[in-house]
Image 1 (cartoon, rainbow, N blue to C red):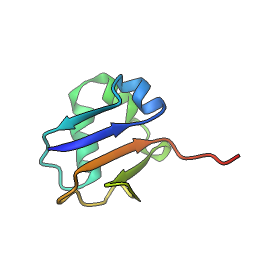
Image 2: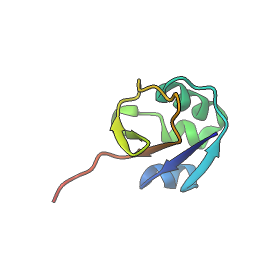
Image 3: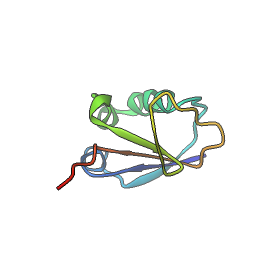
Length: 82
């Protein structure tokens, strides 16, 4: 089981702030494909990965990052400064 957290417009599109997911995904990208296959709201949220950032166990990473031993994955839009 892995905790998946959604922030900002990702959370709005999916309708959940977080959930526990049973997955066999080897990488973040594999997890995204599993989520997209669930239903349309996930497919919409993950339609353009270039508009998303991801963190595994609170470390910013890439979508090809391995999930082996990970407890948490968070998806969020890029941060903007101001």
